[in-house]
Amino acid sequence: MREPSTKQEAEALALIAAGKVRVISAGPGCCSALVRGTSLYVVTLDADGWTCTCPLTDYRPGWTCKHVAAVQFVCDGRSEQGEIDDGIRPEGASDGHQG
Image (cartoon, rainbow, N blue to C red; front, side, top):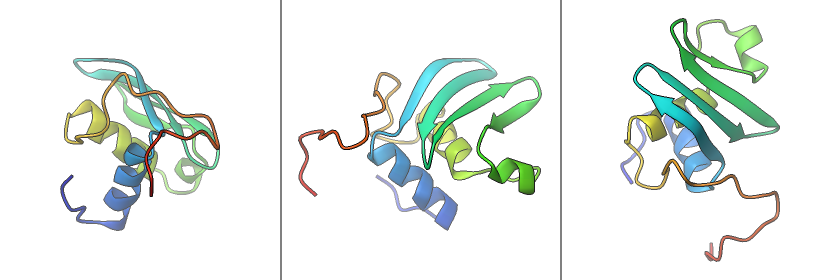
């Protein structure tokens, strides 16, 4: 995986590596995904742009949160580990990896 250039990218890539991003649907100009952070957030891309249900978007309009950044990585195919059929692992579930 490439080196992140910002803290936000590092956090987004960590979400992907932990299996916390699940793309529900994706197509040209649209995307819907679930991201498990402190809670489960819905991230969407439509004609109006990217949106996320996390509380950060209420306080920082126009800011791209780590949840949106993670979904952008997956949808853009920029992450080696964020495949579209990766599920969000339940809290406390093991994926068989040590670390």
